Amino acid sequence: STRTQLPSTAELRDLAADRLRRCGVATVPEGAGITARTPITGGVLYRLPAATAEQTDAAVAAAEAAFREWRAVPAPQRGALVKRFGELLTEHRDALADLVTVEAGKIRSEALGEVREMTDVCDFAVGLSRQLYGRTMASERPGHRLAETWHPLGVTGVLSAFNFPVAVWSWNTAVALVCGDPVVWKPSELTPLTALACDALLARAIADTGAPAALHRLLLGDRETGALLADDPRVALLSATGSVRMGRAVAPRVAARFGRCLLELGGNNAAVVTPSADLDLAVRGIVFSAAGTAGQRCTTLRRLIVHEDVADRLTEKIVHAYGQLPVGNPFDAATLVGPLISPAAHAAMAKALDTARDDGGTVLTGGEPHLTDQAPDAAYVSPAVVRMPAQTEVVRTETFAPVLYVLTYRTFEEAVALHNGVPQGLSSSVFTRDQREAERFLAADGSDCGIANVNIGTSGAEIGGAFGGEKETGGGRESGSDAWRAYMRRATTTVNYSDALPLAQGVSFLQ
Ligand code: UN1
Image (cartoon, rainbow, N blue to C red; front, side, top):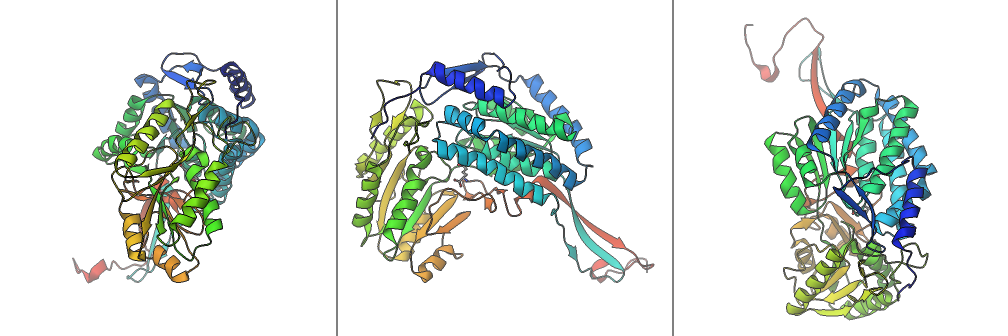
């Protein structure tokens, strides 16, 4: 169904201006390089300046200078900054969530969830600030101590995507700051306003705690700004979230100077549904993961691999559930599917559906545009489910839109082979009540993804685990567990407290 009443671009601009002010952005800078639009109407909210090469250089230089100070501040004191930042995020939760809805088109509950993800990672990072543990190892030599210490790494560059305009930046930033690293952030060109709000809130936390002002620098820029950060040897770590294409452009440049990259690229996530699965529970998990966020999460469920005995029953239930999804104004409490980010995203979806049909697929539901009269520059569309005869090229490709391809299998081996038979390796699920199947899916020769779930969907991970994936997803891990290690350097230390000088490996020299 379609929600009919959309706010006007002018109303959304006023709302954005008010929420920006509340977050501490008194005036939005004016320029020509970056266009802030709202996907709710497709209209232009602001035109902002893009960072020049000189400004990018100055931002990195300032962050580098801040690093020299910050690395010597004890980690628990660094945690105090992140604690303050988390408080400010909680205070400004509603304003920030509104900006996420205006700029990324997320429904209210998901926008609030994204801000919650930010405060969660702040809590995590504050705890981490007292737990940046190294190991001590048993030395093979008498009177020797062998240990490792983790030190701050240096300036962390963050390139982030439109679909999680604030949370992914915060995973990187909260952890980098407690690890002793300043951050230079280039957000997506599509989401400059949420970035201004985050930058202002963090600047306030920095001022409130007396930390160096240049611990955070925001660069509103384009691909060229990203390339400058990739090439800059002062950027010790470049954490990049986005498309595989972006990763291919950035990673070799960082590698050429032996810099460190943390890549979080495309996903093509699948769920295997076995005959023993609780189908009603599976449907809820599947629909949230496939149609939630209008299919624009890197963890979105894009492929369903269903046992042939339950395929018809399951797809019928899914198609029924899709029929109940209200598409429309994301500020409307009843809406579950907001707009796609742009008409280009809609065009990519339509093209994928055409290709799927050419490949012998049947579109069971979805693909219809909505609200085209009211908002011709926006892209509202019903999420689609497509039954496919085989895992063709289009199924193996990540289209950043709500298209769920359904494939069937006969044996569990076949299901796992189909599951792993794509270039991406981010998130995965199995729905089953058979413990053997669940464990086989999680085993070394099961799912090849960085995230493997049982009886929940592929999206909506908690921040406590390490987030990321294998193959073309890029191999990086962010947020929880020991992902912090990517933001630090390890020093291995041997101390001789004896009056002898035994050499390792029993080597004898000048003895
Ligand atoms: C992303 O889409 O880039 O697991 C991140 C999830 C969220 C993060 C998604 N916690 O779906």
